[in-house]
Image (cartoon, rainbow, N blue to C red; front, side, top):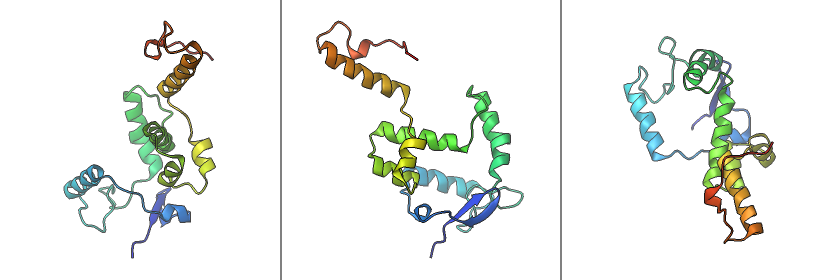
Length: 159
């Protein structure tokens, strides 16, 4: 029997909620990349952590990783230093939305107990999607043969 565990604050414990126990499908390409990583790592056994600290063999503490690795990489990439682990969750949710995934699918992939959490906490549309949607509405007003087509929209924004 597989026991679902989580790592929070450097502690390994049972997952928080029943929804956290749900299976998440793993794309074959990602599975292959993870298996390749495991084979090349210091800890290649099935019982080892995939991303273990080479000194301890245990999971890294997420705050140490955030401060030492994630923020440094974000700064080098020009993203600033206000990057945290939930940034990845917000990005994942935005990308799910961009794919057209139904809201229920997004909720389940995000492993939220409530669809309101998925929509209200993690729901922010990407700028280009908002621009395209707005241009389509304007196209309804001006008609399909107006001088400015949705493809010719500028980058002006109204705040």
